[in-house]
Amino acid sequence: MYLNMKISDTSSTNQCKPARRGFWRRVLLIVCIGFASASAHADRQINLLALFKDKAIVHIDGKRRLLSVGEASPEGVRLIATNSDHAVVDYEGRRETLRLGMATVFPGTTKTTVDDDGSVSLWADARGFFFADGTINGYPVRFLVDTGATTVAISSDLARRIGIELKDGQPWIASTAGGMARMVRINLDRVSVGDIVLRDVDAGVILGSHPVTPLLGMSFLGEVDMVRRGDQMQLKKRY
Image 1: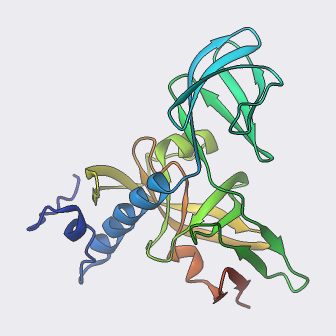
Image 2: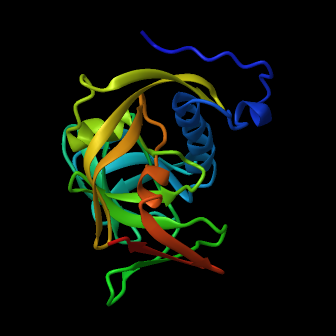
């Protein structure tokens, strides 16, 4: 049975207000933060609308573009390949496979570098957000670093692509800025950023396509040393 949460003030501001007691309330909070961060501040949102031989119609930030294989849009999104059910696009060196009706978000350019001592350095984008290149169970992803998120949070669409089974997870109802959403609490076998690898990481899987950008929350960040100096953030594994 899903757990229900009553909210006395239904405004979006108070809906995101942290609850004081109980782990489950803190898990609900991460989804509220995550939906706002991963959807409202992304640089490039791309939807695949139609497929043809060596061509595709996509929406890029709401603008309709017809691209041929090898062609780049004015926004810098390049069509790499198409077949009967998907297209491969590239933006600033990152490739993504899109299926019809599917949307993806490419964050702005930020750097993830691995230092000689094994620590990872991140640089903020123009809005002050930190993104980190990493993996979930070996699958490459780009995380939005969210210190307000209790756990790593991903969408069920991404979980399906990674091959994560939800049947053994714990079902929840989450309160988000957009309303109530179903989620499943699981443990990820392995989460990495640079050379930092953590195992058995607590995570929440939101049923649906959001958050489009997976959130790197405190179930990972709380296990590493984290220092921010201006627009640079350094993560270092504890030994």
